Length: 339
Image 1: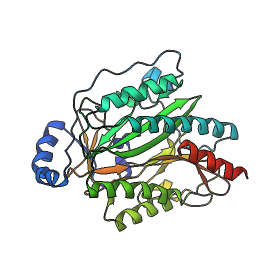
Image 2: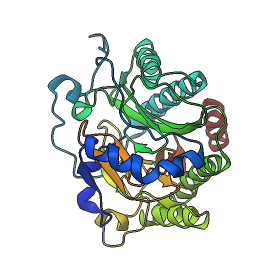
Image 3: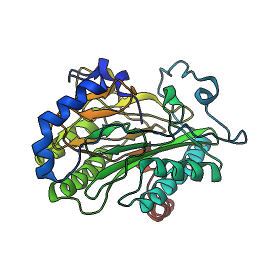
Image 4: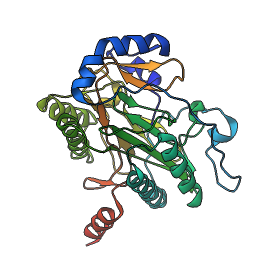
């Protein structure tokens, strides 16, 4: 999870802030017919509940205490073996929480209930939900439904039959963050929506396939863009992956489209790097608006749906390790590496 307004300076794609009231009329008038054909609802922010508290016993990242993000790291840090072992555990817990939350999803469930479930599971496992209070984000996870590209704030809107929803979960434990997300299908999703979700996941793995020492970061975005376009989808360029570790967001930025003039695209991957890959695929436009009312919710300009998947990656001596795989897959991968 990361705030798109930070990225706007890096991209030529038109991304901007606008007000909720002006967007409501525009969205409804422009895409009402499209939505009825596609059998999905346009989602706009709903009422939210108060921010949930975290017990004093849970170790918190600095921004949750001071309210300030502090200076952003400027160097790419290479993790030590000790740090990597901690990140493995943190990332596996994040994945466990994601999978448990995904199993709870059903028609009629409010995204605020998902947030409450994840919040409590974080606390029960001695971890802090990283999005909470990050740059004043009011909830513990991001829940992005249908036309919400990312950073949707959990609210009191019930999920409807045919919705697709991305759950973006990051936790902080033992001094390290772990970040993972997945798009789920709620009830009976139409064929185009199912295809969008399937291709979005394939694009994530196409990017991961490029991860190895000596490979330039631009290869990740090239692979993702090419596969998405081959299936008739666009990649939203205004949001990128990021380095992660003791800080939530660090260099390098991982763009999901190739942009040769962006400095981090030419950086070569090195053993010990940890970063997220989190492409957002759209069935329509690649342009988004950030709703001014909350400063976070990113919606597609034309009301089209999007889907996103995310893993936290470690660059190893001979390739990469996906730290946020489901438990059984992760254990099998580690066993193969040991043998």
